[in-house]
Image (tube, rainbow, N blue to C red):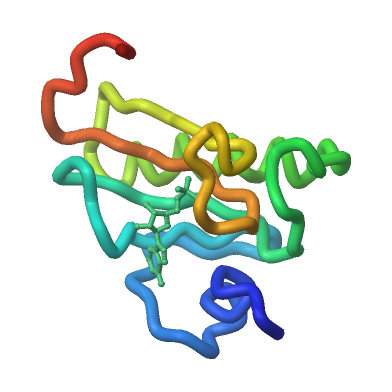
Length: 108
Ligand code: AMP
């Protein structure tokens, strides 16, 4: 298995897990851009949002975002999915960034 997030989801590589259920894992980003920076990802491999077909996984990802925010005490937060290298994606396993804990301003 060469995908780093598949290996993290499988527990082969250590990570700081924030939540985990049958379909989704959430881990702390190793280079946080905000006091809270968590990545919510499906356990099943897919390269990006462009490959997401299963509505159950889509729902589990969004519920994971909401649950991470609640668990981290965030009332305001930003959710981002970079899709493709040109959009800033560097790890090609779908993940949603959850950022909060500071003033994030408006999108530039
Ligand atoms: P993206 O640029 O949207 O693909 O986001 C990838 C994110 O994964 C970056 O914010 C990285 O800091 C983060 N990242 C990469 N490898 C790891 C890792 N082993 N553990 C935690 N976060 C990671």
